[in-house]
Length: 226
Length: 226
DNA sequence: CACTGGTTTCGATGATGATCGAAATATGGA
DNA sequence: TCCATATTTCGATCATCATCGAAACCAGTG
Image 1 (cartoon, chains in turn blue, orange, red, brown):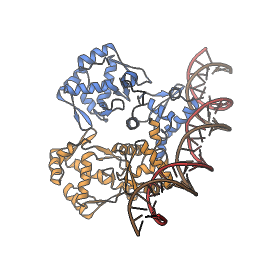
Image 2 (cartoon, rainbow over the protein chains, first blue to last red):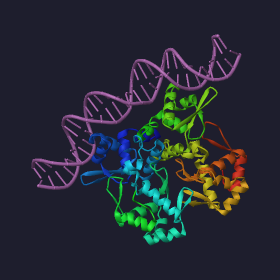
Image 3 (cartoon, helix red, strand yellow):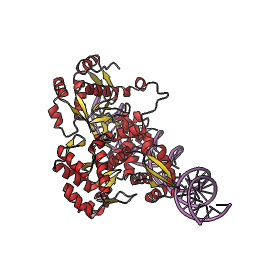
Image 4 (cartoon, protein in one colour):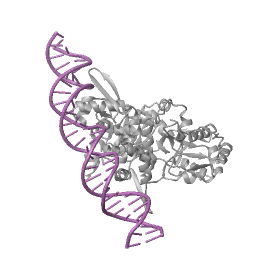
């Protein structure tokens, strides 16, 4: 499959919409994707089959549904890069984007947090000396080491994962970096376990609970009352 | 401009070919790009205008020519990522790709080296302790610091550039990392100044001169007699 | 002021392919 | 076994757009 064919797999509104819906990392059934893209199930089925052929998507049969997801994190990263090129979706008169588009406040990017909440967290951690910039990634300082461990993260284990430890991930809405990689994923998992955030599946929106607002403030000094 | 529109700008053979021809970092005139893509000048002109509109390309008028180039290194990186997804161009019976496709041996990627030469260089530097892996990027060690400075690189200046210092860049042919970023660019520049490599403009192929082979061996311990 | 070569505009054609209605297939439940 | 739901296949339609010939445009050059 040549370059232009892979690219063409995303060059149509319905396909781009379906792929973008999957950047959250969830696997969604075909019917749901059809609805999101605003096309009939047969059209969606056609597109999905082709994107699977092209290696962009993977499919898991389960029950009578077929769940589609991105084939790899690499695809998600390319989509985010492309979105950064094309610029965030335009809103009329841009009346404080964050107030309008909930995706800009707190959302998931595959398996870590993104949006203004994630950026605020990264900023605060850096200001408090938990993490420092290190080329394209973050590095956890001595202070941060203790802090994260106290919070319940097993940093040594995270470092031994094959994936990047603390990727500096730039998203399209803020155009500023937040924490991705193994650390970013672990943080989101821990937040969920602690009931600080809730995430409706099939959606990238993240809801911060009231206990989460308190926790984020007490533990990290982040004001999540956006 | 929405995601799918930007993507669609590359989803056709002629456009992909033209963009791919520009990944070398050179600016090429419209007629040359038309020839490379195998289309008539009028068709090429049409595509080029649209890609400029979409922010993928930039154009410089000079004399009676119009030189087109990629709008930014970010575009080059996306193209390389996409090529890694689609897989390298398929050759029949793949009889030792590197022996067949000169692009796989030594080529330029925008402003740094790529191909097997670049990978060999990165491997050797790492084995000799000049550089170390650091998350997504490379880091220059104490040893490397002295070595590079002795070679004539101004590392402090490179670190102060806005761009990443030593990006770990994975290319499609080797699927292994080599040195990009400011350091990668500086190395290629220095190699060219020293007459170690020659690069014909408008082409991504890099030729290692005989003095270059000696220099690479003596200075870095790299055997460039591919 | 023509002339040349590079580039763009215009107009028309032709092919690709996105889309949907209708029907077939698959899978679990009553 | 029959039904309901999810998904795919088939066939046809329709819009988009890549492409090229012809001609205009533009910038140096003689």
